Structure formats: C-alpha cells, structure tokens
Amino acid sequence: MQSLILLPFLVASTWATGVLLPLYLYPSAVYNDGAANWKPIFSAITANPSVNWQVVINPHNGPGLTGLPGDNDINYINGTAQFNDLPHVRTIGYVRTLNGQAPLSEVEANITTWAKWNNYTSSNISIHGIFFDEAIEPSGVSNGANLAYLTNATNFARQMFGDSTVTICNFGAKPDPRYYSICSEIIVFESCLDNNSGSAVCTTSPLPPQYENQTTINTNIPNTAYASQAAIVVHDFVGTTYNGLQASVTTLDSYVHTLKANAVGWAYFCSGEYSSVTTGPATIGALGSAVAST
Ligand SMILES: *[C@@H]1O[C@H](CO)[C@@H](O)[C@H](O)[C@H]1NC(C)=O
Ligand SMILES: *[C@@H]1O[C@H](CO)[C@@H](O)[C@H](O)[C@H]1NC(C)=O
Ligand SMILES: *[C@@H]1O[C@H](CO)[C@@H](O)[C@H](O)[C@H]1NC(C)=O
Ligand SMILES: *[C@@H]1O[C@H](CO)[C@@H](O)[C@H](O)[C@H]1NC(C)=O
Ligand SMILES: *[C@@H]1O[C@H](CO)[C@@H](O)[C@H](O)[C@H]1NC(C)=O
Ligand SMILES: *[C@@H]1O[C@H](CO)[C@@H](O)[C@H](O)[C@H]1NC(C)=O
Ligand SMILES: *[C@@H]1O[C@H](CO)[C@@H](O)[C@H](O)[C@H]1NC(C)=O
Image (cartoon, rainbow, N blue to C red; front, side, top):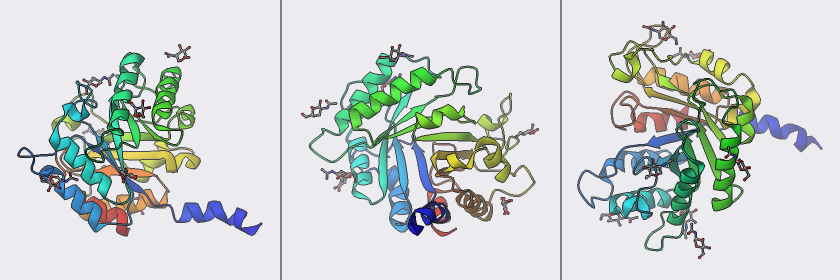
C-alpha cells in the first residue's frame, strides 16, 4: 500500500512546530481587566491561526493553595477561559517536581486540583495536560534516576485526565532517552542565547549553555525519531549569538526555520525571561509569526 510508505515522509515534511509557552506572567494589571497582561498572547494566537499553541498556566508554582482555581482568582479564571475560546490552544497545568524530590503525594494532590478545573461550571477553564517542571535528576545529568518517579507521576495524570492527555517533562537538558516513552513531550534545552549578555540568570556562575542553533539540536536530540516530542526553550533571546550575530527578528526567524526543518515539535523564545511577552526582539507576536511563516 503506497500510502503507508508515503505517510511518514508526509508527516515529517509537513511537521508544524508549535509554541510551548511557559506562562509565568500574572494575567492582569488591574483586577478583573479581562487578563490585560495576556492580551498580546491572545492577539498573537488570533493573528497566526495555523500555529498550535500549548500554554502552561501557573498561578502559584502550581494550581493554587486552596483547591479552587488559582485560589478562586477571577483573573486566572477569565484568562484561562479566553485561551479555551481560541482555536489550536491547549491549556496545560503547571506542577513542579523539585528534581523528583517533591513527595509524589503532593504532586498527585496538585494534579487532582488541576483536574477540578475541568469540573468548573461558571466558565470553561478546562486543562488539557500537565507540565512537570524541574524533572531532571538532582545530579543535573539525566541518567534515568527519576524513571520510577516520573512513571508514577505521568500515569497519575493520565488516570485523572485520560490516556491521551499531554504530559510535558521539563529536563531543560538532554534527557535519558527512556523518558521519551514516559513523557509525551520533553524540554531538551532551556537556557540563554548569550551567557555574556548582562542578564543575571545568564551570567551567574556556573555559566549556562548558550543556544547554538543546529549544534544544540544535534547534541540534545541525537535521535531524530524523538524530534517531534522535543521542545527547545531560549528564555533570554538578547545580546549576541554563540557565533557573533545580533539577537534580532531575522536571527529568530532563522532559528525557528531550522527547528521546523529538523521537525522539532515545540519551541519558545522570549527576550525578557518569563516575566514579559512584549520585550523584543523575541516578542510573542514575533515568535508567532516566525512559527507561522518560516
Ligand atoms: C473576561 O473579562 C472581560 C472583562 O470583564 C469580559 O468582558 C469577558 O467576557 C470575560 N471573558 C471570559 C471568557 O470570561
Ligand atoms: C503544589 O501546588 C502548590 C500551590 O500552587 C505549590 O505551592 C506547591 O509547591 C506545589 N507542589 C508541588 C510538589 O508541585
Ligand atoms: C472547553 O474548551 C476546550 C478547549 O478549547 C474545548 O476542547 C472544550 O470542548 C470546551 N468545553 C466545553 C464544555 O465547551
Ligand atoms: C469531576 O466530576 C466527576 C463527575 O462528577 C467526578 O467523577 C470527578 O471525580 C470530578 N473530578 C475531580 C478531580 O474532582
Ligand atoms: C510507583 O508506584 C508503584 C506502584 O504503585 C510503587 O510500588 C512505587 O514505589 C512507586 N514509585 C515511586 C518512585 O514512588
Ligand atoms: C558560554 O557557554 C559556552 C557553552 O555553550 C561556553 O563555551 C562559553 O565559554 C561561555 N561563554 C562565556 C563568556 O563564558
Ligand atoms: C542555523 O542553522 C541552519 C542550519 O545549519 C542555517 O541554515 C542557518 O543559517 C543558521 N542560522 C543562523 C542565524 O545562523
């Protein structure tokens, strides 16, 4: 059957890289302002309807302390409902694992609280997956030490949300490949563009790795079979690249184009760490159009 032979090729050649946005920015500037701080994101989504988006909702290093959505915060409730009103957006709940040292009972309790968002009736704040942050082993080198832990944690998420739910594990570095059969998506790089840029997180010793375009992809995703599950996050897209180019929209477009050519599943670039979506050159609008057009 010819179509069976052609299918993998077609999937690879038309793979659309999506945006994985760790949204640690508070939704509102003023109480009940319709999530004004998130408006640039809603606009970028609306302006780029071909792009798939995953938005990690994070009221309080997790779903909130009281069991109510974002501690019953109308700003989170309104902003999350606006995401759910837009096409091609998956809202994802943030859960931290503290390098696999957070008690599983606490991780499971937080996943349960996220699942309650799906039972909320006043507006649609349903959540479509869990983002497990700080998933890398305490050694900082991924060697499989958290395999049992993440198996339990991701199984629990599937139990609460259904078998097809998305489980995103943030290693921030090259993962032990066994994690690809446990987590549906893995952040394989989370760092800076320039470790000499003046940004505090990028210049603090020990210096973090720089993003190096194709070299980072080859090193951190050595098996191309895993590319569609992999995500790259560059949270300080400022200064100068490893090979002396300026951080610019042109450089951003080229990097996103290269991620797409390598069939990398998900990407995020921002210029103001996670606290701004409007700092350039990698604004959310520039990223949305880079992913849509390149
Ligand atoms: C969000 O809040 C704004 C301003 O109060 C309101 O107009 C809008 O209908 C709300 N949207 C949702 C989805 O709740
Ligand atoms: C669970 O969520 C609470 C509230 O959002 C947060 O303070 C706590 O750190 C989270 N615990 C884990 C293990 O993720
Ligand atoms: C809530 O929003 C999600 C995401 O857009 C959608 O899949 C789901 O069908 C909506 N639920 C209801 C009850 O409208
Ligand atoms: C959501 O509601 C259903 C139906 O009432 C219930 O079975 C389920 O336990 C609820 N989920 C949570 C997390 O409370
Ligand atoms: C994972 O769950 C299994 C079965 O419930 C249990 O035996 C095991 O100890 C758990 N692993 C961890 C790391 O908690
Ligand atoms: C930045 O990181 C790279 C590794 O990615 C390293 O080779 C380089 O020396 C670092 N830059 C500085 C200024 O230390
Ligand atoms: C990134 O790497 C690709 C593939 O080698 C190359 O075509 C592109 O020009 C590079 N981009 C930049 C900004 O160096």
